[in-house]
Figure 1 (cartoon, rainbow, N blue to C red):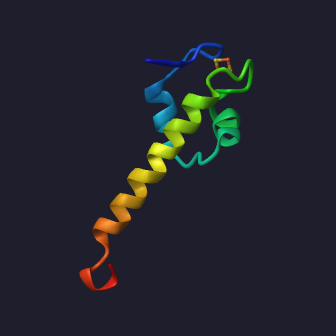
Figure 2: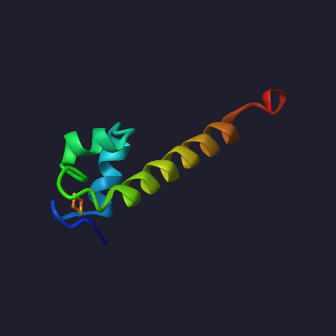
Length: 69
Ligand code: FES
């Protein structure tokens, strides 16, 4: 699915940039160009970043020993 029409970037490219360390829309703009033109994709970029944070948090919590929960 295309996320950023201006730069022709799909969700897999954005997801890869997030996996490689982009944590903000600005990081994504610097890394891929996403969101650097009209900005219409900004909401989807933020949603993808939030989804990644939630997944990472759930993974960290799942890895905690029971005593720490
Ligand atoms: S759609 Fe991403 S900057 Fe325009």
